[in-house]
Length: 211
Ligand code: URA
View 1 (cartoon, rainbow, N blue to C red):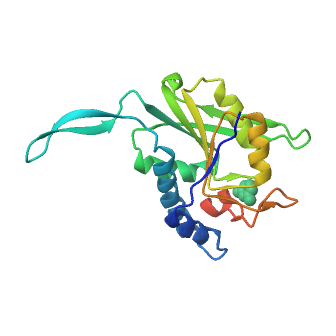
View 2 (cartoon, helix red, strand yellow; view 1 turned 90 degrees about the vertical axis):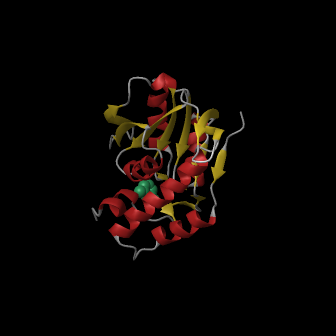
View 3 (cartoon, rainbow, N blue to C red; view 1 turned 60 degrees about the vertical axis):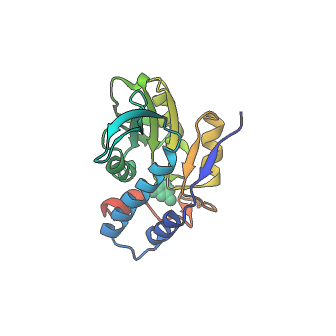
């Protein structure tokens, strides 16, 4: 199966991403940029949503106009906690989307991801799923989250992030060759602590001001 990785290199996304990378960018600014970039990512990631024609009345006349097909329902699943940043932005653009959360931590001795939170809507089987996490570094948490989410049988699945490391993409696609990745950039590498280089630091800390 051919792996699918789409780099969404729209100039507005690239400019805002550079502002996010800057070490001097404040928490408030980082958060608002995350919202803006996520809205732009959502725009690209939903490009294939089907439309249907509906008869409407403008102030001038009747017309047949496109609306989103009602049976094409979305669920956005945030990988906690940094996924919340992308989720907030996407919900501004798609306020009717349903939301799920998944929380995983890495067990320090075995390094196996352990689930500590899982809540998704009941009608997942009728929904297309966007799994969101700003940073795909090793790819381990995204792969474990998708493994768990596949058990709920969504209609389709896409992974959306801000930055990915080549190692993370490779690891993720080894486990989930069927799941396309959408990212704003692919950086150079991981450092010895698992941070993306050049990256933007710890996305959760920068988003929530916890460092
Ligand atoms: N998670 C982050 O928030 N940043 C990284 O660079 C890697 C993982």
